[in-house]
Length: 231
Image (cartoon, rainbow, N blue to C red; front, top):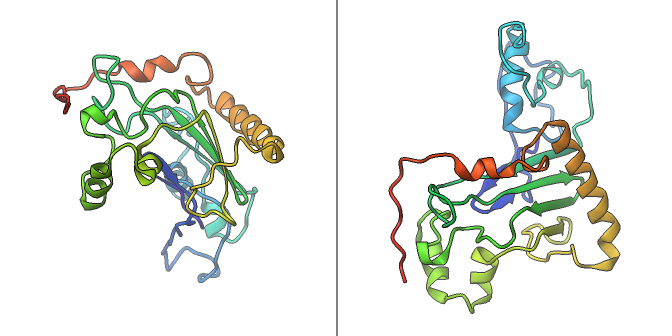
């Protein structure tokens, strides 16, 4: 089961990270390989389902995820041909603008070999403002080398540069999501289709970002000290 993750400022969907599950007494016909997409939000409803617990009856809010128990029982009950992802606050005080710093609002959908991303604030730096040390990306030797190359470097822009509102990648030919096809007229229908599907699901989930209340994410308080500018 391909398992999507959000990694850094990009969505790590291109490499279809497998989710391996082990339950000797409970998995029907073990050793199967399931191609459908699953997400971390599916774990809680799966556990509740296997324990026969009605979360709503127990006082829980409805869960967005879907139980994987049908897959464990080898009785698929619904298609799993897409996955929805989102990002808001990976770290705080990485961008100026509010007391706790602005986040980077983005949502994405993976369907088949297409990966579409909607960046709701393309004027913001995805990895944090350069003056604040690109602090929304973890420190490490690779970051140090690319950061030292400066904003004029192609790889700096690929890693840290601002993104357009729409991104579309064909993972069959571009598994590393380097070539954005969203501006290609030949892909306009794909962009519209995936954007419509993504926004319909986000509306169903009552995501504040698509309901005109997205600023709520930018005003959550934080105890983290203010970062000093580097320049």
